[in-house]
Amino acid sequence: KSLHDAFAAATGVDYNRAGTPLLEVVTEPVLHSAADAVSYLKALHTLVRWLGICDGNMQEGSFRCDANVSVRPAGSQTLGTRSEIKNVNSFRFVEKAINYEIERHIRLYERGEQPVQETRLYDAARDQTRSMRSKEYAEDYRYFPDPDLPTLRISAAEIEQQRASLPELPEARFERYQRELGLSAYDAGLLTADRALSDYYEQVAASGGDAKLAANWVLGELSAALNQAQIAIEDSPLDSGRLGGLIARLVAGEISGKIAKRVFEAMWVSTETAGQVIERLGLKRIDDSAALATTVDEILARHPEQLAQYRAGQEKLMQFFIGQVMRATRGQADPATLQDLLKDKLAAS
Image (cartoon, rainbow, N blue to C red):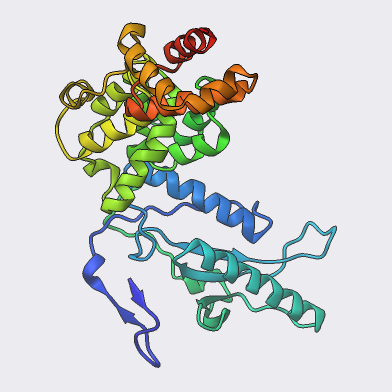
């Protein structure tokens, strides 16, 4: 790669990347703003990482942008002289560089001057572009065929064969998550921004039995734990099968959401399944009225004033008693069973 900022009056050449494959994607002049260009780049960036073409690390030069900019008067179909901004290495800088260059071209035309066809560099510190070299004619690009490399011919059949072998692409998965799984556009976007995360989610949703609940857990508890540990999804100590098993128990009503978070924390630091943690810590939901009756009687006996107020017509105190029982059972009481039991107990004279 070329090093333009390392030397005062010269360009250095770093040969450490010699032999590294280069894939160059060229668009037609169909992008009409810096925002359009950034949106396109972000979609392309997601795609090359999704397909494993490159890691997309812009700071290290794995993914860069050369932006060709030209303007034209409103209503005209003829583009003006273009300039090329080389090797911009962040989405934010791409937007700023293109906007600067658009304004520079407009100012030149308004003064009656003509932009020069040239290559320019973006100076982030000054938020401006500067000339690197002029390219007045096509010959200045020094294109010529390599005599040692034969023409590469790719048939339509080969292209179709490769197309058929592609995995589900992020845009298609994004649409499917909304259409078939009922996810919001926001959640679907987060879950398709990275293929490893998306594949993990697919497995959790399949084994957990509830796609929306799986999305909440992957984007919530799991992502928070990964961020806190500063590790990638590929290195998660909690595999998708075990997290799916936890969600399945939530769906089945075996544990509450509060208990599920305790189970998650235990699973994160162990190799236990949700069932093993629930059994070891005695966290299974209590849905037997007889088992809850003793605790309910103790709570009612402990709060005679609130009991009298409830029986006097303050029925909103039902939530107070539910809260007290849930606290006493560490969140393990089944809400529906508890509410029915409390209604019976509170109605008794």
